[in-house]
Length: 283
Image (tube, rainbow, N blue to C red; front, side, top):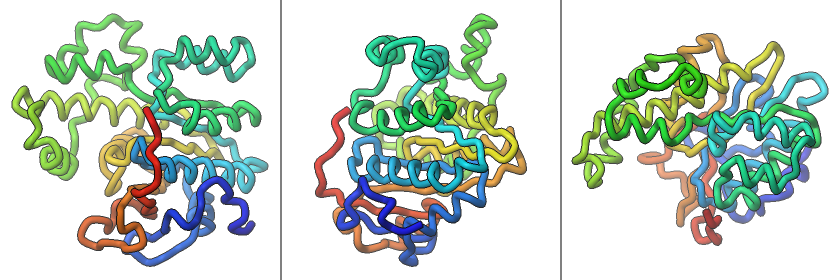
């Protein structure tokens, strides 16, 4: 297994570090993946270099581990109520056009996520539509978590078991720091935090359901959800307390060749800094 397997991302446009800023390689990430049940690949959604790296890491994990492990791809980018549509496409029952028509894909699906889904389809791996439906996340942000009680039994099937857990103190502090100056914060920060926690808990619960004996779940999400092993990672450990979890956080920076210990330390078990000067993915 050599560096040549990582072919999509140009190595001139990223640097790979461990949690403390020591330079490492993608091969070391790949080796670490083999020691875990779940790997979270935290992205900035418009990071074209990061998306290429996600595909490289997923493809390399497939090549190295699929002969003796059951691999699943899990995505924040699809909501739980389209899982049937995803399954129908993977099974070849519907065309890609109908899949796109009915699954509400993100605007950058074709450029950034399709390669991973197509590889999973080719290999007959499950693809998990992991996110809570946005309409229910929006309900919580407007009216609080108790609004979910009014949903039908069928609707609640798309959500994690209720009541879902509150955000941890550390995550709440980080979220409040991020949102504190935004206009939305004046309209009820607690509700917005609860809606974010629904997002985190929903992804964690669906990842937990995808975990099988001797399996590996590769999950893609916005980096904030898993940075510092908070958010979705914390919720997953509530559902699967013994889960072995690896967090890879990708972030673009103008000075991507420099690991700033004041802001990059412990963002993930591995931190990949990408070149912010590269063209953005278009959502």
